[in-house]
Image (cartoon, rainbow, N blue to C red; front, side, top):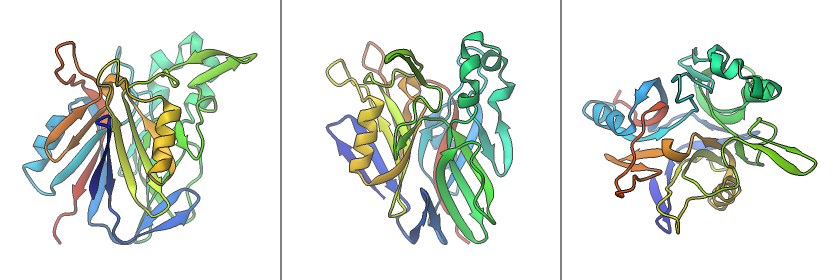
Length: 272
C-alpha cells in the first residue's frame, strides 16, 4: 500500500496488490489477501470515530471511506447496500424517493444504479463494479454490495443511471453537479487487481475539486479500468492511519465533518 498525492488536491491509496489477478469483465480476484474490505451501515456514522473505535482492537483498521447516498432530510438510504449476504438498505423503502413526482420517470434508472461488489466464489474473493440488477457470476455468492454511482470508467453512465437528463441537447437535470468542480469520493479497480480509494478535497475557490469527467480521467491515468463515484461534496471523507481528510472545510478553514450513512472499512486480516 502506498499513498499518491497530486497537487494537494486528492489522496489516492492503492491497497492489496499482493496475490491478485484479473478475473475479466471488470472484476478482480484474490485467493489470498493480507487485508479485508467490509461495509458499515447505520445512522450518523462519523468516519473518524470508526477509525478510533476499530483501531483500538484487532483487526487493525487501515482506512475508512465514505460510501453510499442517503437523504439528509429523513436519513433514509437512496443506495442499495448488502452486508454478509443480507440486504441492509433498500431505496425502495424510502418514501421520499419513491413518491417524489419529479423522479418518477427516473426511478427505473435510479434503482439500477451501479454498485461495488464483493463476491465469494469458492475459496476466491472477487470484486466488481456493475449495475445493481446485473446477474451474479456462476458459482459465486454476493457478500457485500455498495450502491452509489455513476460509473466513471470504462465510461461515464450519468444519464443511464438517472443522474442527468437532456432534451434537444439542453441539460434539464444534473443531480450531483457532474460538470462542476467539487469534493468527490470514488473507488476503482485496476487490471493488475489493485483497489483504489479516492477522496478529492475542495480546498478553496482556486482549488475547487474535480468534475466527474476530470475525476474519471485522473483515475484512468492511475491505471483504473472500472471506477464508481461515491457520495461526494460535504459527505466526502477519507480516514487513513488515524487522520481524517474531509472534502470540504467550514468558513474558518476547519474540516467539515458530516455524519454519513455508510462507509467502507479496510482492515488487516486477523492473525490465524
